Image (cartoon, rainbow, N blue to C red; front, side):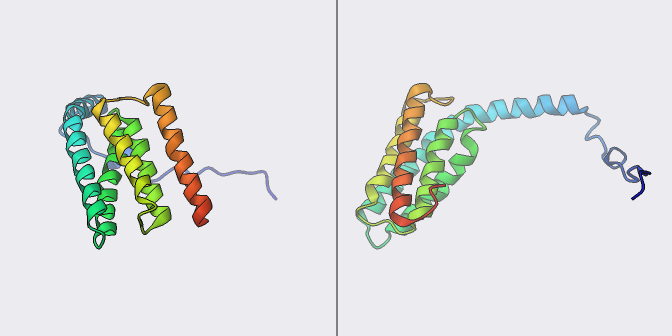
Amino acid sequence: MSDDVEFIGNPNPIARKARPIGGKSAEDMLKEADQRVGVLKQEFSDILRRDTQIIVDLLRQAETDLAGRNSYLLDLRRVAHELRGQGGTFGYPLVTAVCDSYCKLLDMIHEVDESRLPLVRTHVDALRAVVGADIKGDGGAVGRELTESLRVIRHKIAEETGADPL
């Protein structure tokens, strides 16, 4: 084996291919993006309250309409999935944690019967509490206790179903 090493330069550096957008520097574009995120953060609290009410309404429908229960809970999962993705971005990582736990729970149990419906209610109530108190950040000790309680629920279901507690 030879100790000679040959380095070949990149014949297509990205810098030659990328063109500045509208003559703005990368720093200016980052400042503009930060400003837009700031505006969206303000709007997100309204979106969060609206989507939380949608989740509450979907749970009520799931509790009363047995035939459509799993459909309502899947719709609830879609809304929770969106909030899970947006919460941390807009300063609500505890919302992300609660919605993530719900999505994982539903992924483990697939079909929700009467015995499992209270587990869904626990997640929805947790989300309502976080949103109602407008808890931003991780929620401190209360947030840790809440996320730990939801983790315990998922692990208990995992033990019962043999699923991965995620």
